[in-house]
Amino acid sequence: MGISASDVIPLSYARANFSELADEVQAGAEKIVTKNGESFIALIGSDRLDYYHRLERERIHLLLINEAANGLDDVAAGRVQDASSAIGSLKRRRNA
Image (cartoon, rainbow, N blue to C red):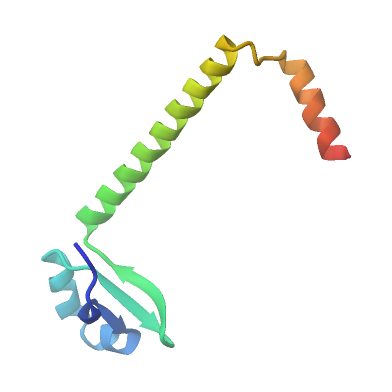
């Protein structure tokens, strides 16, 4: 669902019409509330927020799986070093 110009509203309008906006959001709309002409907050339904959080968790899991696969590729290619050497190398770089 895209955001249209009518979905961008000033904070003063949101304050005065919160119940109406809440009904629109509950029906599936998303609203961007502005303050001093700048984006300030978004109004979205709780189901949509849960969905966005699930998507973010899935994204994190996919990134972790990708990193694990890259690590396995490094091991298979022989690009490895023991943990003590790696930690020592990181400490030396940090202190340099």
